[in-house]
Image 1: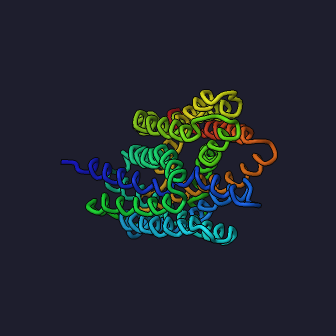
Image 2: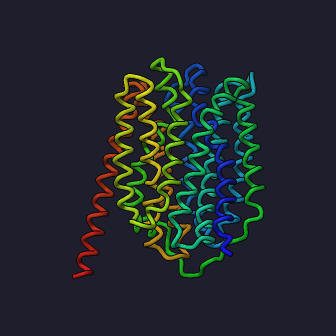
Image 3: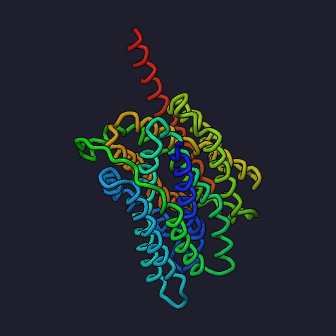
Length: 392
């Protein structure tokens, strides 16, 4: 009896619960920080995006740890760091602390959270693909993303409700508890087999996957902009349902993962990514132009549906071009491209909002998704040309 799918299900549930620690504060932090005197959108965006800086800087470590000692150890270590980081982020919620001290502690906690995220996601991918096999890598990538963005869909409104009713301190203490529950879910999942082989330098691996990485980075701009500033777009426009926009995005994202998660393995990742990027771009442009909350919510749905399959589709292409013993390192490097987009989008989008308004952020996201579409179209044309030359 093949137990691998049941193991993957436990990993997915554990990741979902744990990733709420990342998702719940995401929409709250800009609101929390901008209430302090002299802390504007740029500072709020930096507090959101800085977590991704530590994620980028630790992807190589996470990939090496997953390849050499197993995804199980890597993921469990990341979940433990989630607990500590969320507890640290709770401290700025204590009344009476100077605002500058609150901000410094918040940034420190966000940096630690980014390290935990690096280990958790790379560990989950290495652990899941090791148990399921390379032929089902697309399913593992899809389920990993479904857990992350399912948590994103649920975490947005839950975080806003907790913040409005109980404050930032309680929100972050709840965020510290959830990864502990996640650890319990993955505890009984066995270790996946390790692969031996000569390792390549991290920068060499990045060079091999650079175009797939550039495309996923450009795609990530729309997601990061929506996650950090969609609530403020609604609030600044005087619209209701600010928290619902994140849910619309997340539900569309998760539905896309479960409905289409098999397609990259079946018809090829580049084709799926191309269609997905066109949908994402349409969603971002719709949020930019939306004159009403309903159309903005429709844009969030399209963005979620479009973003849904880009990472797993291009991730399947990455797995195909690297050796099994370098899989964790390659996926870590691939994820680092997306992390870079997340890290830069927060502060950059904050500056755009200060100068041109919140709507313009989503024009920027749409242009980036369009650029990613062009990159993937280039890769697909090269792939088809290479296949034709082999046949002849």
